[in-house]
Image (cartoon, rainbow, N blue to C red):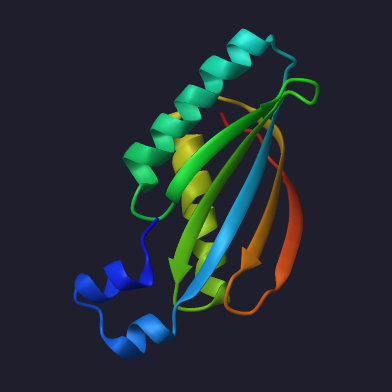
Length: 131
């Protein structure tokens, strides 16, 4: 994870660092069509590769878990941003990368964001399918 100390070492000012919001994000990506555990596992590898290659500077410390019963990939990562609005902007960028870099079709995406600076938690659900 990109810590506040690393941000300081990267040349960000004390003011920039102190105003950062650190958030833990959990995305649940449900597949449009049922699939076997093996196929879901292979698809989760594609998601992780896409995130690391296309959004590695945004999605810090990505980790995956599978829910075979729901046909879902759970993606957890951290985000550093200037404010809560930018946290959600960063999450949208990660979703865009996943949609662009994989050929997966998602039925429902759910997200949970917990801010470490304010303790606020937001949960939303969005239905979408990639083409």
